[in-house]
Image 1 (cartoon, rainbow, N blue to C red):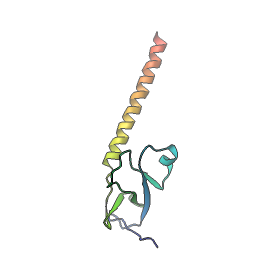
Image 2: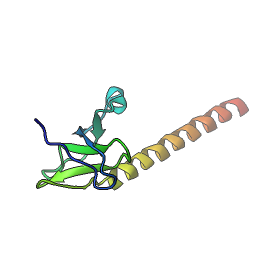
Image 3: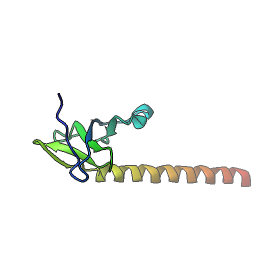
Image 4: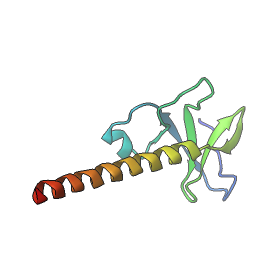
Length: 102
């Protein structure tokens, strides 16, 4: 039987989730059983993370100990993608306006 880990923050049971690295598909983005790990992977990159059902915090297992999962890079990458998407949308609108004016 698999070992059960409890959240260090709220003591609820953690769910083990596989971390997928690389370009994600729409199906992967909707799959609640995996965590998207971004495009960069190293020898130290975790293969699994543990997520709390209650507080939704993520943890990695390192030498048998739960440590907070580093999401800062992933969040920064998502923010950058959103900014690029907004810039593209703005350019498309400006292009449409330009076509209508001339």
